Structures are given as structure tokens and as C-alpha cells.
Image (cartoon, rainbow, N blue to C red):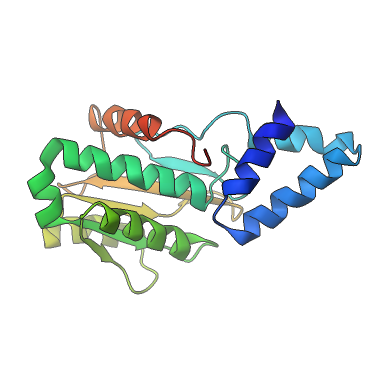
Length: 192
């Protein structure tokens, strides 16, 4: 049920901010405050779906929001997909990781870089906030196998996103979008 899913997520969420956010909602529901049910339902309505635009959603706790747990799972799926397609190339060429100035962008970029490192894939992590086209350019310039840009582009400030670029510096297209999505699904739930 909803409460047990929220508690399971809470127990494994690596981010203190979203853990605190979720703990408050759980406590309110357990105290009989039914007004938080819709909020919790929207947070646990299913994982954010990965597509040609990558991921995009409201920042917050839960599988249906943009947060560190969701991005860790996404990065692991992406990294495994790259290794499956071209292990030698992934380990030799690496992945460019950039981020914008939105809330949580740097942390999500650092998490992505850390996951890639655990898979033996080097990253070129930006040291500063950069515009989205810079990541695409860097993929080509550095000869990387892929790139990730943490940004929600034109969406409102409560959003963040995760865009993936292929070795040609362009946003991913079929069949790679579906291949990456399947690799993410194979990782399993973010907080299980």
C-alpha cells in the first residue's frame, strides 16, 4: 500500500533533505491527516519515465519526482547500457557530465559521475555551472561516448531534469532511448 511504499523509500533514500520531506508526510498520514494522501499518491504513481528527452520532473521525495535516488538508478542503467554496447569504448572515452544552476543540479551531476566511476567509466565532470549546449559540444570535443546534462531547461524552478547525449553530441534518439530505459528498468526500483 501507499504508506508501506513511502516508508520503504524513506528507509533507503540517500538524501537527508528528501528523507525529511517524506518523514513529515508519513507522520501526518499516520496521525490521520488524509489531506496528504493525494500528495503521496502523486509521489508514488510510478517511476519517472525515461525517453528521448531523458527525465524531467518536480524535485522532491518519491519515485515520481526528481531526486538523488532516481538519478542514481538512472545513472546506473545508463552506465550499464554503455558498457553493454561498447565496454572498451565506454571505459576509454568516458562520459561528459554538466549541470546548470538549478537546485540540486550539482549534486545530481556528482552522483552521476560517482556511479560511472564505480562502473569503471571515467567522467569529465564540469567544475562549474554551464549552459546545456556546452555539454553537447564537450561530448564531441573530448570524443566521449556519451554526455549527461542535469537541467530542466525552460521548465519552472521546482523542476529538474536529466538529458542524455550520444557520442555525436546530439540528444539520444531511438533505439538508444528505449535501450537506456530498459537498462534503467532492469536496475529495479530506486529505493529497493
